[in-house]
Every structure is written in structure tokens, then in C-alpha cells.
Length: 239
Image (cartoon, rainbow, N blue to C red; front, side, top):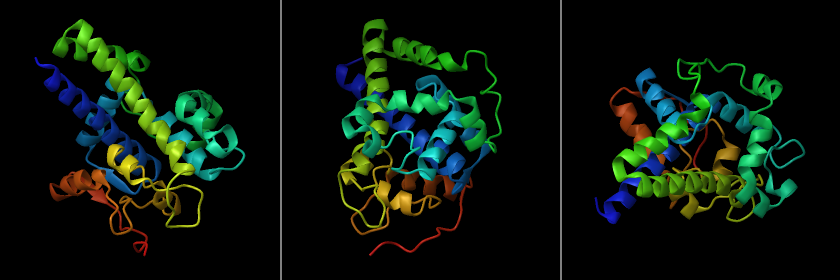
């Protein structure tokens, strides 16, 4: 397999991880702005388990706490509290402080109903299976390189939302989060963070001419085939 095809496949897997995060973890589980068919939910959860080892319950808890204390004392990863560069390159450390606190997880994600995937004894080591998948596709050396790229890029993309998209960019609404269009393109629309903080239950993040939410295309496609149900958008688009 040529290097170009390996790069393309790796980026596709990375973007699949991004889309599973923004659609399943964020818009469905955390904010309940939409629902997906159980089969789609299972596949997205499985992908995240294999390629990120994220626990949906923990992710939901961390993000809900972030919204409750957005950029104030108590926010798990505010760049105004910890510094933009610290959050950009160390967000996973701040994330784990809440994610591994059982009291916080119970408080902020009491409605999460676990699935069979949550009960697997090796759930926390799913990325090892992900490494095996990359290695079967590309061989051990290239597979390890692709796996590392995926992990690092995924972490940095998520970190950019919690750091850059709270300090750099433009604002449509009166909150401290910002919109950065180039980050939105790479993160399934998550870079339209100011819009999201103003209307967190809206399942469509683009609210102004020229803004693009890539995940919305997938959501609308799923909806067309009866595999997703989007709740009525609660807001008018920004001027």
C-alpha cells in the first residue's frame, strides 16, 4: 500500500473519531439535542472504544461540568484559569481529573445508561485493539506511526476547542467562547464554539452566513434514512 493511501485511510479514521465524538458524545448524549438509531449509537461507541478508549459516561460528565462553570472557577479546562497553552497541550490531564472522579461522574452523568460495551473488562485498553487494526492494515512499523498520529491529532483537535476556541476568534454571542472556522472544518463543526455555548442544545452549530458545520451533513443524511431524530432547533440564526 502506498504512503498516500495510508495517509488517506488514517485521516478518514481520524475524522470518523471526530464525528463520533461530536455527534454521539456531544450532541446526542451530553446535550440531548438529537437521537441516533441504537445501531448507529453502538457503532459510534465501538469506534470510540477502539480508537480513543473514551468512556461516554466520563466524557459527558466532564463536558457538562465545563458548561456549568464555563470559564469560571470549577471549569475543568478553562484557558482563562489554566492558560491557553497549558490547556492546548495538557487538556487530557485536566480532563482526567474529572473523568476519574467517581463522585463527579455520578453527579454530572446520572442519566447515562451503560451498554454492553461499557461492561467489557478490557474497555480501557481498546486502543490496543485499534493499534492492532492499524498494524493489520499497514504492517507494524507504519501501523504504529499511523496509530500515534491518530492519537496525537485527535487529542490536539479536541484540546484546540477547549483552548483556542475560548480565546482566539470571533463571537456572535455574549459568552467567552469563540468561533474559529478553520478549526470547525477539522473538528466536525466544534470550532463554532461560541454558537454552541450560547445554545448548547442546538444540534446544528452553524448560525451565520459563511459558517460550516461538517457534522450537520452526516446528521441530515442519517435523518433522511430514519437513523437520527433531531430535536427542533431552539434558536434563530445569528445575524
